[in-house]
Image (cartoon, rainbow, N blue to C red; front, side, top):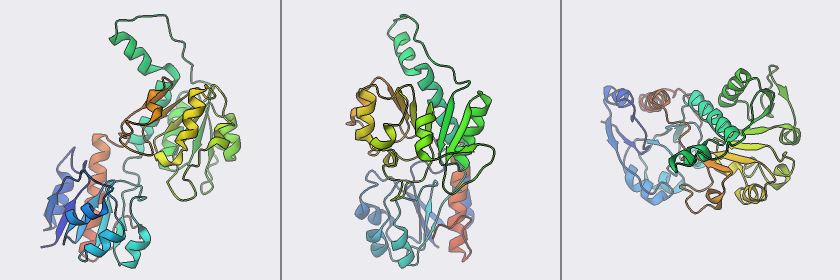
Length: 312
């Protein structure tokens, strides 16, 4: 009986359906807690002699592939595979698969929640009420007529754009790989200069790491907000901290940061920053869809078939 180790912490959290997919295929399933996802030696120890692993943010690279010779498939419980060394996987003949699109609506909801929360200073208002401080009214801004700049017009980016249209916003976007005539495509520089809200939905690659740097932040309007529900490493957080602290941009809504949990990050000390604990994809609906796709990818590979969504 082939063995599957599940390291993704949220796998089958909303429903047992993903587990049922694995078990109905006759696989031995072992869910293991991993408190050290960045430690490859620990990850390799947890996988052991298993033929398959379902991962979340767990680091999978050369160490894992060398120490787990039975491994045939790494299935990502999610979309981004920047925690997996794809070249090492290819060299060892290990299939890597993911679950694209399964969390698109959930992340788009969260991105728009951060947009609204920034526009109306929602955390400050909640804190005042809890402190029994009705205070003087805090002036927010309306979204109608504002410009939303989307960096990366994939499924999530398009979902955010759809929501923005419902609020009467103008949508512009930057994506070197996507052309969509519904919205105006602009250069990255124009997007940062024009947008009232910049929402990041790009994958993390060597080219996009610190994509949002001092040069682009300097182009933003003082009244503009940065929203990030993609990857923390897309942003040079030292530069972002300076611009926020000096009031050179209005604020930021961040569901992701470069190091998590970010309890030592100076960004948490700023009143114009909203930080949520990397939960954009965590809804019941997304959890079920993501889990079932991750499970089916494993089953298909172990049955000698192509996974539903192969990366390498």
